[in-house]
Image 1 (cartoon, one colour):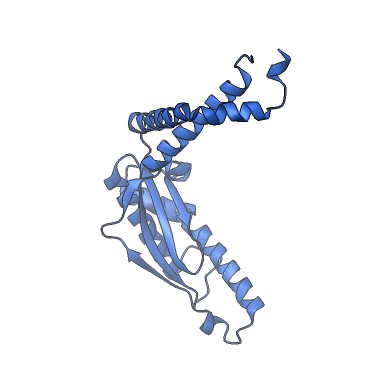
Image 2: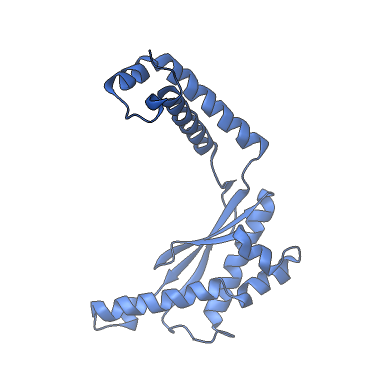
Length: 205
């Protein structure tokens, strides 16, 4: 059994390369298994709304000091992130929808992307694509309201910041993980397992 723990040799590599028919069929089989898993247990739908955040650096820091602008952006971005994920905002979302709790919203249903100057993406995952769209739209709308008014927030935002909801109608609603990812992962997993089996569990001549 010492061959089981020995380092792969050139012959092992040649044997793997010669089995190109096996790898082709294996990749296809792995992709089919991935597709089957996708349709048996599909990932939730994901919708996203877009909010435009403009920090107005020219007005906030007319001296154009890079260091001051950097800390200004970092500080205000952190405040906006805290607002978006605060109990206040999520509580209003849950109250308006009436069929979801704050805890459910925090457990992977909502996610925030691209928190910087420019477009912020508010994602919502749900088994129902229409409900996912309503979640994303409501969350972004409540965020804009709270960030714009700055009411109930412990640390107020800079008055030069402008927050605008830019995408609420016909929001994209696709699966959170595309079918192509399942196909690719299925093929890679199958080929990886098959290569280990061929190298370590085949009896050498």
